[in-house]
Length: 312
View 1 (cartoon, rainbow, N blue to C red):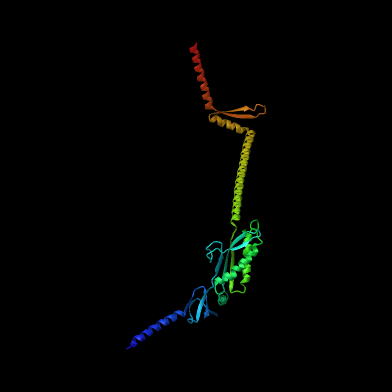
View 2 (view 1 turned 90 degrees about the vertical axis):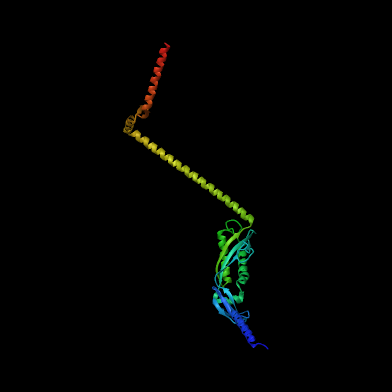
């Protein structure tokens, strides 16, 4: 005989499991900074949900989350940089025929009020980037780069040319986004990668230029130092000339120097210039040296006298 109690218990447990499963399917979480787009059997309904917990009809309805915060799409020659694992910089040709890789970063955001239209048109951000942003950027850069040179004053890697490329790209994308649920915020030309041979030649040229600048600076410093020495020498000559003229015009100063020399144990001899013009030439003789020389002569004379007496 079948135990009805066990059957009822099993059915009750099954109903609980089904209820939990249905409850789980009816619950949708919209993350912060996103807008939830409601779909019915995969089709966009036009209804959107704010961030937070949302209830939907299981199986029939679903919610696709669309990020409405600013996003960046980077196209770079460096592998692993940006959203792709392989290098995906925009390759262009200059007027010289050189192939140049340009790294860019596009900053944009999806209009939260048109999140449903965005999903209906582009489905997700990757489709927007690959089907609209990248082709538009590639086209405008190739057209613009064809008028720029690889090297020279208007070279593609110069600041002015990079600003020109960024400005034209920004304006072209702005026009492309006018009828789209997308808002363009910024376009940045991050780097211009020249062919390896040209890049090395430019590096060598820059190094030579820097060496010339260093040498010119050294020469300028040497010239400044020499000029400073000439000015100093002229200043010292002027001081000596002024002192000499002062002494010649003030004879009393010479006499004072003569007295000071006598008091210091030196003999200050003033002789005639020898040409009858009254020009005195002062000569200072140390008295001690003079005395020592006199004593040495007296000693030598006495020694000579003794020698002569002995010889007699």
